[in-house]
Image 1: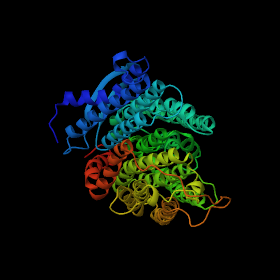
Image 2 (image 1 turned 60 degrees about the horizontal axis):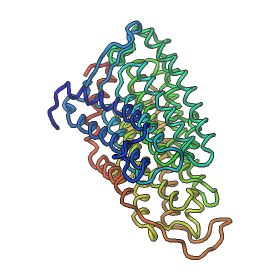
Image 3 (image 1 turned 180 degrees about the horizontal axis):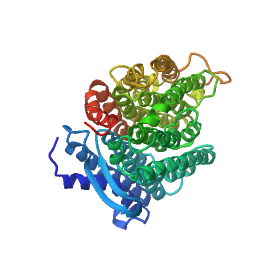
Image 4 (image 1 turned 120 degrees about the horizontal axis):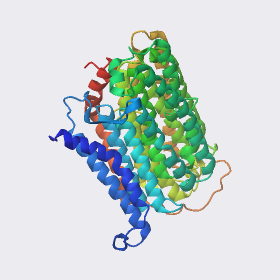
Length: 532
């Protein structure tokens, strides 16, 4: 680690949040003639890579300058009065909980910009695409950096419009319907969440998240806490997404362009679970304790439901879409995150935060890979990919097939890879929940979640067998054809975009202490009401 002065750390965090907005504004005008390269489109896509690359470098420097001996302390803080009448402040800061998500967001956005430079999505002006991508990045980074409830809400909402347009203008079939479903679900959830945030802030007399967490709910009556948790939890659950508020997700993922799916799964879903940890757990602990068993129940139903939906899509002759299957798998994986949070224990919450990061890495890689398959075949239909004219990727594109198999086994939680630790710790937390929670109920939830891991392994291994090894006979309704056409293996730009995700998946799996060493002290302090 390196020694960086507090003022420089403060500047870095402010730069990380604001720079994408400045980059978006400068992406819209035409590039000067000397910077256009071979075309104006190339210039604006290169601008996107440059801006997101600068933000990633700033995030890495911030992480290197972070005091790892005190990860529970808010660092790189800015605290400026904004709306004095409501005591709303521009309050920024990072600790061991938010720092990994900040770096993950910067990394995935840069990889998406790099991928888009070589493989621009089909659709309208690249200027608008790059500007929307940068606005989306700014909103996501701000969500993980702000420490004021109203600023959190503004950042939380800021990502909706750019993602709506990315789906509606650059998406595939049924993109308009999917985009409308996405925006309506998330906006309705957000309206309810805003009411809960206002209730907490007005009742407590402050919107400052650090002060509220330190107060640990002592300034709020139990009835206020219960009402606030219900209202805030609904908005966060829609974004997570929690069953049964998940139905917008498969449509949005299926229709979204590749980079839209990567960012939606990799970072946007994490905003909901981060809100549970940063706001609901420390600010309204009594209300959370009331709803924790219900949250855990919905979580394990989501684990089973998502796995069964994936098994149905993976079936021969079902006509399942591989992007849709991975979207449903996200419902199951985020169920483990919610189960860990519902346990209200340091072990469970650490597991949830670890699973958040692991899911971002692994599912981001999966959506990149499915996008590459769809580019090559013109479809993500599993029966087509696995039919007589289909994939057999091991033989035709061995590196692509190997990466798909790697991502699948990482997603199913193979020990030694990132997906294992988060889900295991979440179940350990549920096995012995916090005092005041029913242990028999949580033991039942843990048993159901364990069964869900078996279903997860089943559908992912079926996908690997069908897509990577091909089929021994044509799928129902498919006709025998001649030899399959040539298939391009992994290209150089794809390797550049995917290698960091592979390396970090292995690193987090073999060396989980790197991430847990950051999150655990911060989680302990959060659950103890701001006391280290």
